[in-house]
Amino acid sequence: GDLISRFYDVESGSIVIDGIDIRDYSMESLRKNIGIVTQETILFDETIEFNIAYGLSNYTQESLFDAAKAANALTFIEEQPNGFLTVIGEKGVKLSGGQRQRLAIARAILRNHPILILDEATSSLDTESERKVQSALENLMRDRTTIVIAHRLSTVQRADLIIVLDNGEIIEKGTHNKLLGSKGLYYQLYKNLNLDNIDGQ
Picture 1 (tube, rainbow, N blue to C red):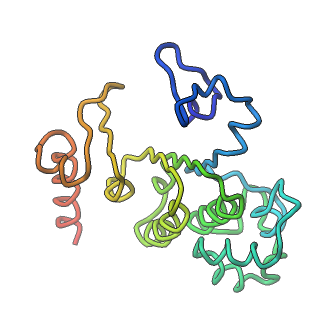
Picture 2 (picture 1 turned 135 degrees about the vertical axis):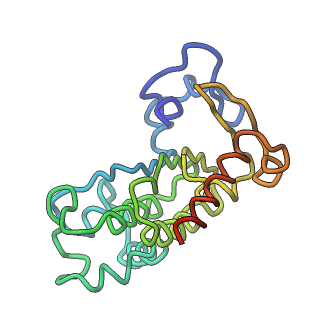
Picture 3 (picture 1 turned 90 degrees about the horizontal axis):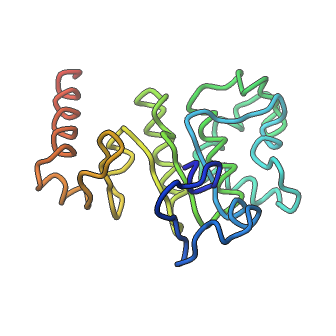
């Protein structure tokens, strides 16, 4: 994620978007077209509306409402004492982890970036929160290029291409079904995950 956004530059090889090396784009052009949702949500001791629309001035109340709804955040926002005008505390301390993530997703939906990076976006959530966030992420990923970095296989199963890394090297790539059929590391991870789920029931 940091390489694509050029917080760091590659030391060998290149990263291209539409056939153009990202180093040939201006930093402003590159970053205004890339949205990032991480496990550490950046929130301010401000209103919910401020946190969703942070940095934007040309949004409408309708687009704010629609973004919150698509992020599965509207219900809990409307349950807050002052709705969208509720102040959420430093780093969103008055909200749960899943609620904070859904605000970050609403922010990304409102910005409508053509390229999206999800960097361990559900890794810190409990199972129930993950379900709600995963549904919101599916709305966010629709009709855009999305790069998902995750250890949880539930986050990547529907991807067009899954790349499996081990010690920084690509060892497998393909769809979920293809990788299961090859019975490599991805298969072992998936098998272990399902065994854990069975044991936990």
